[in-house]
Each structure stands twice: as structure tokens, then as C-alpha cells.
Length: 263
Image (cartoon, rainbow, N blue to C red):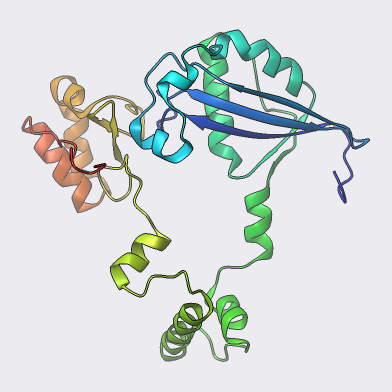
């Protein structure tokens, strides 16, 4: 690793999964490069048979289909190679938290004792955000080439925001000029999300809770078995959209996927 003093091997990891539900979804692709202190590199990679269907929304992102993994090893069959490969190594990746949580859950399901304790965990995204501030003053300096004076006064901040947006539109030809298209460009909605925040997601075509102690359970199951929990959700600090979905679930009405969404 050029420019970095390693005390022990560093493994750089990325995973692809059947979906975004950490409790229910499985790994379908794993790629790891081990970088030794002397600069030597080793690679471990494999497609993984998750033993459950890959969500269409996920296939649209990573391109891996059920038929691509049907003859590949399961995580249990491949796990010993992973354990041996990353033993006594520090961990690195981009947006690493999700991958590590999925990996730990996969090990837990098969009864393998794995922990990231005692390892350095380096997320390259955190370095990027640390060194490239995202506040208005930084954006004004980057796109307008001058310092924002008397910032945090409402008038100055509004005028600076307009200048930054105009400069971005001028600089990046790929930015849509239609405001709705522009909003979708910068913040595309996850196709598995039912509500804006992703508190509920589509999983195997059913509305499923995506947070808390009941993560991974369908709204229909909660309506039939956990009515008190649903009633609590209606009084807690959630968006009106989430509360509407919950109130309808209490009455036995559940969201239905838009069958034309992916046409």
C-alpha cells in the first residue's frame, strides 16, 4: 500500500447482497484484496449461493441473477476460506459498516465465532468526507472561487446557495436542467423503499419493516400478531407517511407493489 505504514495485513472488502435488509438478506458476491506490509497482494473472490432469491431491485444494481449463483458455494461452504484469509488483518472498505454487519450476521447464522474487535477499521468514505467538507462555505469556495463573508446570516446564505447552484449547473453538463429530474439525479429513491425514509421496504413482494426489534417481519405479520407495537409506532416520532402506512396496516390494509415500476 503506497504511502501507508501497515503494521499487519490490510484487507479491503466489498460485498454484494440479495437486498438491503441486514437481518434477512444474504451475500451473493465477495471480493477481498489482502495487502501485506511488504506490499505483496493476495485476492480472494467468489460468487456465493445465498440459498434465497435475489431481489429484482438488487439485480438491477449489481447485475447478479439467481441463475448466476445457483452452482456456486454457499456462505457456509466458503466461510473457512474467508476466516483464514482475513485472520489477524485490519479491515478497509468504502461505506464499510453495512458490509461488516452483513458479514458478521452471516458468520453468526452458521455458528462461526467471528469478531471485528481488535482490528483497525478504515472507511475510505470517512476520510473523503473529513478532508472535503460539505458545508456551504466550502461549496462556495469550490464553485464560486471566493470566501463566503458573514456566513450563517440568512440573506447571505440564500444568495450564496443560488450562486453555488448556478455554478454547478454551468460546470457539470451532465446535470439535468429539469428540477424533478435534477432531484432524482442527486437523490434517487431506493426502489425497495416503500416510504421516503425506507422504514418499510419491499421484500419478496411484501411490505416489510426495516428497523428496530421487528426488522425483517412483514406488516401483515405485525398486524396479525403485534398490534400493540403498531399502535406504539403511531405515537412515536415517525413521519406522517410512516404513520399512515402503519394505521392502514392496523386496519388490515397493506401496501401493494407497483407492478409497472420496473417495466
